[in-house]
Image (tube, rainbow, N blue to C red; front, top):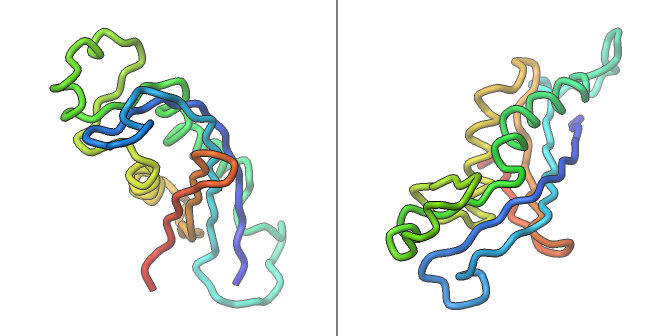
Length: 143
């Protein structure tokens, strides 16, 4: 099956409410997001002219508008965190979520947002969100 992957980078800060570890404090990451799409057909025939499944430029523009512009240089905190830390409400670029802004929840948010905007000829085949160089949360569709 033919798949294409485009990689994006952005900086985001967050904190996890009721977490017993370093991530309970506001901190940031240099995230890398791997977005993988596949064609709707399972055919392994060569693609007709122009020979591409979807232009990488199209994927880049959609992900930039749908994900990167919303996450880059933002502070994401949960509403529960805000109740315990009301002073954080004065932070610039604050984005308050109903859920905890863990890598797992971020990647779930991203898959929902991207599935709504992808071109008809492709489907989202997977997302891999690196929080560090050796740790990532991954979403793959249920089989």
